[in-house]
Image (cartoon, rainbow, N blue to C red; front, side, top):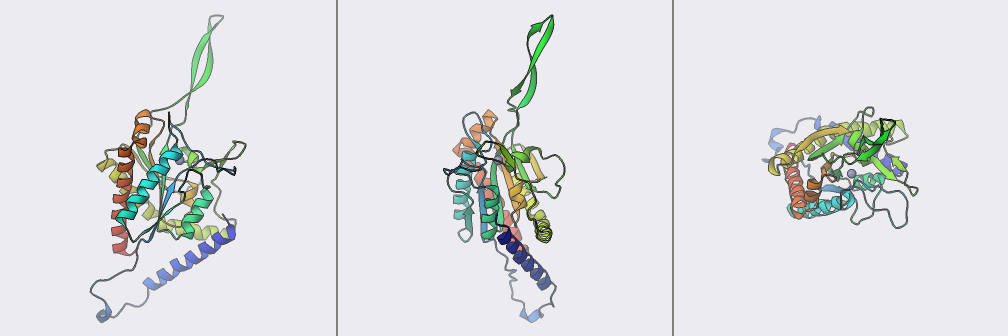
Length: 304
Ligand SMILES: [Zn+2]
C-alpha cells in the first residue's frame, strides 16, 4: 500500500470524525425547526465484499493460496460465495454500491484489498474465508529393533473442525494467533511463507489515528459479527465457535466496521460438501444479507 496516500486518507478520515463529534455537541436546534421525522443522514452507501485468497497471478509474485480440502480450494469457494453475496446484496439494497476486492481467480494482496476498501470509502467490510485445522503430528510404531519399538512422526489431517467462526479486529498484538495466521499469509515465488501482521504505518501519528478509528469501529464490528453469527446458528443451524478478536491484516487496515467470516471447515468432508453446494453457498450468502439488513436498519436509525 502506498504509505503517503494511506496517511492522507487516515488524516482526512480523522478530520471528518472530529468534525462529526464537534457537530454533535453544537447548540441545540430551536424546537420549531425540527422536522417531523429526524433524519440523522447516515446511510450505508458502500459495502466491500472480499473473497479471501486467490491463484498466483499470471505475472507471478506473491499470493495467498489459502486452505484446501479433499477436492476443492478455499480460494474458489470464497469467490463463489462472494459472488452470490454480491448478487443478493445488489438485489436487496439497490441504492448501495457493492465493491468486490477481486472478481476473478487471481489473488489480490492483503494490502491492496485494504486500499480498495478505503479508497472506495466502504461503510462495511465483509471478508469471506474457509477454515481448516492444521495437521496433527502423531508418532507411530514402524517396527521393532532389539525388542524395542521404532517410532516415526507423521502428519495426520485433522478433520474434526466444524462450523463457523467470526473474526474482528483485535488491539492485542501479543498472544497466540492460532487460526488467524493463515489469513495473514502470502507465499513468494520461492514458495516461502510471508506473514503480514506488521503495523499499518511507519509514522507513529498516522498509526495512532488509525488505531483511534479502529477503536471507534470496534463495537460496530463486533455487533455485525454477532448478527451474522446469530443468522448462521439460528436460521441455518450451523455450529459456531462464536466471535473472536484476532490480529488479521485486512481487518486491521480497513478504516470501517470489518468482519472476517470463516464460513466452515474445508478439510472436514461433510463441511467441504456443504461449502461447495449451491444450498450451502446460498444459505451462507442469505444469512449474511439478513444480518446486513438488521445492521443497516439499526445504524441508519441511530445515526451512528
Ligand atoms: Zn482464509
